[in-house]
Image (cartoon, rainbow, N blue to C red; front, side, top):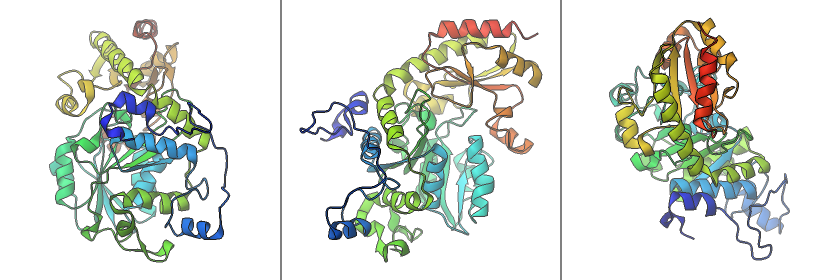
Length: 428
């Protein structure tokens, strides 16, 4: 079926379903298997040389995960998707599919703390330089690109500051420089709030642990290939060139515009082994069925909480993209459905000690390193997600000692407001 003709809320339910007349099953089956029986030795040989599709080993693919990947690809209007074990493994596999020792990628400074550590330390040990721009403006990003740059990386909404980059202009920079634009679209809620491919992005990575799953029950990541980059530009011999791991097979000539996502699977997933379990993929499929309904409620609740916090004397600043005074407001209005997200940030009056006292006094809102959950979550980035950053990197990322990141859940927002009120009563 051509899912591209269906609207998002329909695709999130129907794409990827196996309408097997033998079983008549409404749901997707969970395949808890590590390996698969081969029909013949010739068939097995064809699988291993990538000349025929099929299941080899669950480290590479699994029928449940394949259904989930098809649904994600349909939601994004992409040529393919790859389910992996976490959002961080999605970034690692995507970047290493493009860059090797001596290469570099250029990124915005507004990054999740774990991404900062991967870029600052782990990739450096692999010989891949990550150049962090002074800002997320197209000019600052373009200034760092040279002939060894293999990708530009941004978040569709910065974590935790909620800054929204000018995706369309940055995509133009990437295309002019003949490198792909990778967008971490975790805050874009599986393409429902924001679809970077509509604005020129080439690759999307996403922490599916968040809104895609939506209930805090599974860990996972996703890589999505827009199929809109010319890999024959001469900069990517691992994609448009002989692959040593497959006896000189040229992935681009064999798989065309889906060559990148194939590269991520047959090299990245094969060698790094960051495969999800079939059960986790099933939970992601289940979460996707209600994605748009959940996110719409959470966006409305976020606006209501932001309006409440805006007028409190114990709040120093409310950073919410739905407000006109937010630096990302104009871009959010352009790139995000509803012009907003389900996350806001607040800076409290006082210091670290008073901020901790407030967080620990909350009863309904959970203190966790999580977003996109059905439970409202309050995070203190300076002591958790961005704890490992230097003072300079904290400043660049917009993380202050009293900053709180708030991700609204599915509760009645008035109960959350009352929870905040009682917590504020504990802070002088």
